[in-house]
Length: 161
Image (cartoon, rainbow, N blue to C red; front, side, top):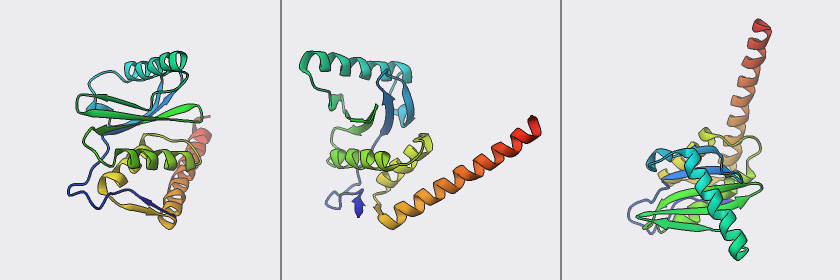
């Protein structure tokens, strides 16, 4: 299986300006690219959560896209959280990139943190492709890094306690 992260027909590669994981209460659990927005992460998460609650009560549905200025937010509910990606309104690959992010996060076993979101963002920005083999290699590398951290934590715990 190949995930296409670029659109070859575009002259200039599009990229995402941010990826956010926000829980139903509006707490931003992980993010990359928040500095492109002017404001506070807690306010941003609360705002999106409030909009979702309001729209769900009024229309029985959820907001999937918000546009303001030259920015576009795409949102997808995944398990208990919302996956939100930030794009330029002119980004013709925004929907494709958003769905790739959703798929990669949903397939991730383990914690999704800012480092993982940064990796996804960089892959899309670079316009590369993720093959099944490279995805397995990426998971393996991440798991080995997590294992190293666990081992260091155990050693630290033994010395401290």
